[in-house]
Image (tube, rainbow over all chains, first blue to last red; front, top):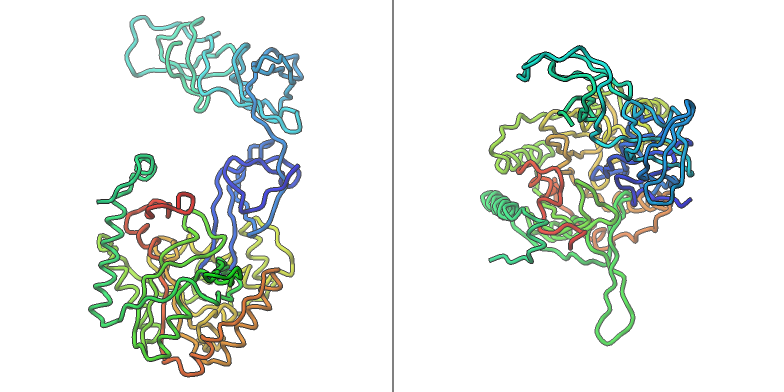
Length: 188
Length: 328
């Protein structure tokens, strides 16, 4: 792969650091009026999700990472791998293991489109869309007429995720969930 | 009437920043007029560039009419050399609002072309000049009442990192930096680079809102004279000003010794070649001016865009410029 020099650093750049693919979240040029220039980067390890500050000397270069974010449809799991298919009409399939799927496992729904991050052509991360519609599989019976603000109760969704929902929600209803906060938004 | 293409206005909805800039420039001129400091104007393009190992001049080629032979010249990284030549020629106290150029410097607080307010005060001590800098900043940032702190470089390191930057061993400085900053550097990295790392990453964010740092390590003297501090350590008679963690200005009790100036030019070039940078010829006109006699003085350079950023609360230098280097 190519190398990037510190003067080419910008947010979104994917690079290799200590053997792991990382993404630059934020880049800042730091230089005292009299003294050495540095480039300070908020770095995210794409495998572990760890975010930290890494500093580079001016002129330092690092290897680019062969990382791509692709839209893929979730198909099914065989228990070991979660299978996705490219949403570009090629029908090409990729199997992501549990470490790649990570927390997104709570929001995986068949036929939904996810962003799968490939490193050297293998999935290393899966990101859910901001909102997914999921069915309630288990919750206490709804309280008739209680549509006002106030109470909430736990509900288990088809994916196994548990969210707090208003008291009037019934089993079998479809709900719009914000996957970033894991919170109920509305009925779907 | 300022006319900009529509696209520029949509990208640059900061026309009010141009008015703010004009106001601050007029405040600066009034400040110095009241103190009888003469405004001067020195060349932006010069035969000599700065030798400071951490500052890169932008080279340009001048081709006289009728020839095809280009002369290498430089856009000035600061008007310092030229202003010192005026001081040596008997100008008295002077100031300049100058365009300055530095290669490679671009970021949220840096634009390769920027504005320096540089001024020199005859017979001023560094303390007197620090006070004058504080007075000027107070006038421009009049909405904020700043409580000024004056910390020595040593005190800043002791307060924030519990280490004495003047007496600690090279290994201790390096270990301190590596404990706080994730970076990979050779063991041969100079002590000052580790100190710069600690200063920019650990200390600047922890400084009081308005703070002068003075008495730098002698190795970071640049064009300041050196002296002995109250604990007997050799220090550079230099200061920097920080407001809200932003470095605003850099001042010196000016070096007047021509011989030492020549030695520093030579040392700069030793450092430059260690960094694989091209050596810069010593500005013989500056050395000649020092030989003729630079009067006792203190001088300071203040980043005008940085001051405008503070005055308007902007975090990005592009917001206080008509066009940053991408749009120039």
